[in-house]
Length: 628
Image 1 (cartoon, rainbow, N blue to C red):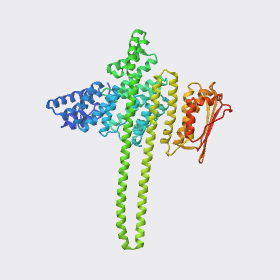
Image 2 (cartoon, rainbow, N blue to C red):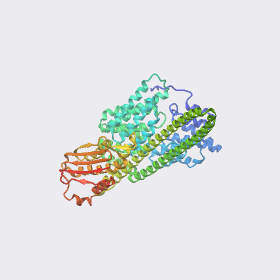
Image 3 (cartoon, rainbow, N blue to C red):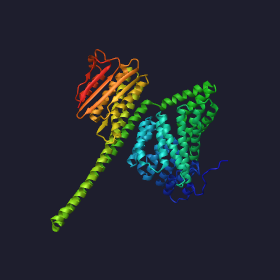
Image 4 (spheres, one colour):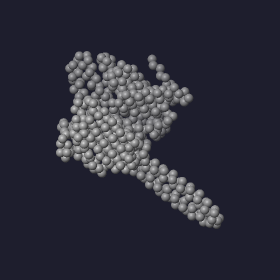
């Protein structure tokens, strides 16, 4: 016999729902109670909402019908019947213009969740377009994550969520750090993810131990559920790094908290934990324990988990020696997986998402411009009022004498200057924020271009085409890094070259380390700052030179040395690049006319209003030029 730690009450949401004297009040009770299934299951709510809907349909009251059908759509989603919920919602969606604003807002949120669960991201973007038209704020980080762009998702999440966190709310910080850990884990950064999870656990434990704040049963239950979710996230990290036995109790804790929190409705979180538990036991050679979790997943009758379910079921049959069943199920798994992971469809969705995000940012920037224009108009109006006041004051002060007139005028002028200075300072801060946002968005879009080039590389068989795409991707990353450094800097005018060159070189070096290269790179650019017009060509030149050294200079891949020196004294600058590799070919001048890399370097140096010098007699390779 299980005893709940949360007391029952006769005044539960369903009782309030039935006692309400209007459909609007019932609509409000239904959507404002997140714990409505704790006392009565979703099936009881389904029966009661269907009963009221039948009455509304008999009376042909369209307003009541729309509200009850919206509630019915929400119940279908809470029962895990996503297709049924989506179909019911789509019928209402066609009546969009006839719906009340509260009904529209709830319906859009429901349809957004339904399409996400079903993987219909194109339809999800359509709904979000309508949400934007209705004045609702659009966030895209979960859509980016669903399409595999977890880093992009994390950056957008930080920008959107971090400013809204209350510094005194431990649960907000716990949820924020756990979300960052989820993005990092999905992106393969398990060490960083575990650090964020430990931070999240410390915050939720602080909240649970804090006796100075009285907590309602619902608040306590939410905190316990969040702790279980964080533990489950840690379990997923441990599975990824092979610590299976340590992961199982954490996953079980996550499953237990999900089961308690989502009591009375279908819990996708619980199914997700069951999938990981089945996988863990299968890896530990305990197929029969894994099969018990698979049976529970099968009972949920959810097609959205069919891919992982078929993979694990095939593993189970393989473990017990039933190779025929394993082969049959594995074929189904491959078919379903291929249909889900359609790369051409994903590229199309990425294109739609980029366009949607750009339009969204254009609207935000346009709104900011309108706000600036409004501020300017208010400043102009204030100036006119001040001028009228000064004129009136002048006439008054004339009668009081020259001395009094001069004194009062100077006081007013001083105040006016202070007000104008404050307005100018505020406008400059807004301008800096806008420029940083623009640099951030440019960097994001360049990263999107890099992702698209990566996808194209996977679908290309030609070695020459792959190399060309990889070189293009490397150059795009060099430019994206410039914009990243700009929006991370306090100032927007210049780039600190030491940090930028270190980041750029680390990015290139990480690619070639996979091939066994062991090259030491020395950078001397401390204190050198360049504007963006000089930093971008400088970054592209370094990208070409360092990549070429890794490719051609060190055939033994070990013991290599690269030296980078960038100096700027006043108006005069100096750039020098050397390595101790096998040296330049004798026909370097002839190759420079046909080599894309050398041509690009020479054009970039010309862009810096200089000439490239190549030392042919040096041991290894040496390039240098002066710039202003």
